[in-house]
Amino acid sequence: MSYYEHILFDYEYNDSSSGSGSGDIGVDLEEPCEVEHLMTSDFQQVFLPVVYAFIFLLGITGNGLVVFVLGCQRRSKSSLTDRYRLHLSAADLLFVVALPFWAVDAALADWRFGAATCVGVHVIYTVNLYGSVLILAFISLDRYLAVVRATDTNTGGLRQMLAHRLVYVGAWLPASLLAIPDLVFARTQEGGEGSTLCQRFYPAEHAPLWVAVFHLQLVLVGLVIPGLVLLVCYCVIVTRLTRGPLGGQRQKRRAASKIQPAEP
Image 1 (tube, rainbow, N blue to C red):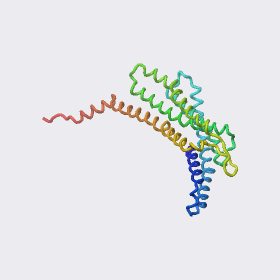
Image 2: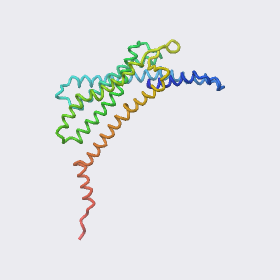
Image 3: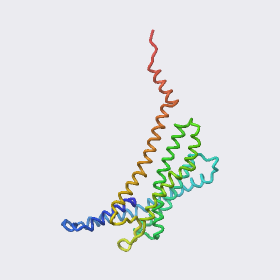
Image 4: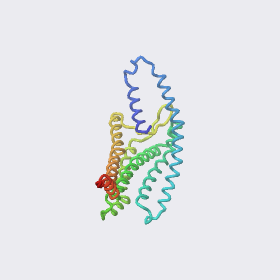
């Protein structure tokens, strides 16, 4: 469960539990709630830390090697594809660095790393989420220019600008700006049984509105916009490849096979 869903669940649960009509149902819901809570608690305290640790080991090793190799490589020898790989690996490396904090929090059901670290891991999560998908959109744009606009004289310079300059403005800068709400709303707060929670806490009077806004932001920036860019670019690429020299030769062969010489 992402922390966005966790916040929405907490708000809905607190809102429903504080209603005046909950005691008029006449059904004892205490036992099923306790069973469900125990199952959720076991899942968080056992399964999630194991998964986080496994992803951390793989991610820190793989992405660390990629960043080290490509970072030490000379710029003259690195391709544009290597440049984008470096950006993706850097974003993923930031994310896996924050996983041990989430693992300990899930295992202990208690945040023990302070308020500053709480804000930091939320910011890292948001930057990785939006930065990764926007970088993938830039990769699709680069492939579009390399295939569809390969004969244009200014294509090479535009691809260089995308990989070396515009990727910071179009991917990293928006991802950083979208992490500003984490600086405002993410904080620690005392929970039940003396535990400490680390999540976003919205103003009570506007909590549903804030949750709806951030869910809409997640769908638009994290899925719809980059998804449309990928879909359009690769559809145009596939269309161009099928109509290119190889596609034209296939069409000619098919047309020639249909025309059979008349028998004497």
